[in-house]
Image (tube, rainbow, N blue to C red; front, side, top):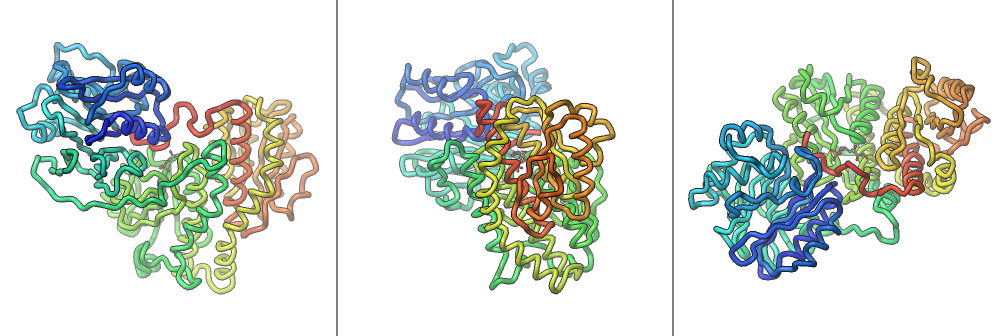
Length: 607
Ligand code: F6R
């Protein structure tokens, strides 16, 4: 969601602001803008829609300036519009602000502090520039400290002022923000990718910390405006270098990177061929004797990975496990305690609901372990234990390689706990470990074997209005992910159903030609799922079966997509691949913006 960039330096800041904004595009946005100092006055440029529109307005009016802030806005308070786009400027034209997050008490602040003022926008942000103007006391750090104490909610703020022509100010609480050190000047940004190549090190801001950034100096203050020291972190190149190479879309590149993502994720979890998670998880005494419940909490695809984990922790480790959607969990009164392992899954490590759910679990004394892709992100920082997925930077909004890496961690973790609790041992354990280590190779084979068949199938289905994905047990969890992919990038309405549940209502929606994609890899229930396929075929559905070679003849009425053999516990890693391809190719045929689907954001930093 909203992206922030700011620069103060020796060179014209505008090209750096625009490049930063284009690197933050992946977060999702519907308008963009920059503010900069033009002589001793603030100038502001904004545009609705793509960055291209903003670029045009700046080209017409190029300025040389050493200081500026920029923003990509994903609308929350107030529709996407020119007036609602950031930056916002104070009525006296002395302060400009960009904001990521939500000010929950914006309306009451407006009523209380500015009862007779009319605001130019419908945003929650605009009240901040009014507050800066009202409380400015000649010292900007003190003013920011005073204003932020009035704000409820989450925020990362970038601020420039005509009073400080050489200093950029920023503060953050609950929303990501970094200050970065560069050769041509210093920066602030929502994430490191925005300054990669221009900056060598960065500082993470949190807990209402305030930062004053100058060309050659960065100073930090706590939320009471008292000077503090912070540790600089290096910017690691390999996590960020990721161009589209020869692929038309990041999503295709990232689907192809799945074997490596899974291999790289598993690699640090093994020492001399033995799986060893000692340094990533609670001690074995706790796991063996005290652990009584696991909760897995996440959003979207990460939740779907969690559903696979739920089944494995129960089936293999024999620990009662519940996977929950973070936005529901955070407002529930969960039955968890010091004997609970609470697992939070997030690619970005920023998702607001997942972070809030994590804080609730901590309050209830659960042991908190997160599975996160972005290093030093808020969710990772606040966890007792972290296992990083090594998917590399994921740019396409629809996750593929991060989801696959999350599955790999869940497989490893469930086997590790199973071994400690002696619920899986000996040959079965060794066999599963062997299969786990073969997964990257099997994912490669799945990619090679299924891509062209799925591309053809997409030709048949892309004009449909509705699609259904069905499965049982783990296959149901995968069909949920297939259905989400279909909706989010090809904009085809789709639903996933536990195969046995269709006839309790949904089957009335099946019409002549309705596509029903069945995932069936589980020997114990495959016959049942095939019967459910028969039921929809009898009502006109066009069915497709995703299964292992050995079951491919169990239907003669469907298209069959064969995936390589693996342990049934790990089948999700393979069966998801053709479903990802299907949504990709249908989206392409429908002319959709595959990497940046409409209305979606890569990092969902508001609830
Ligand atoms: C779907 C997708 C989303 C994310 C969800 C959680 O393709 O990418 O559903 O999985 O928004 O995001 P993270 O994993 O960053 O917490």
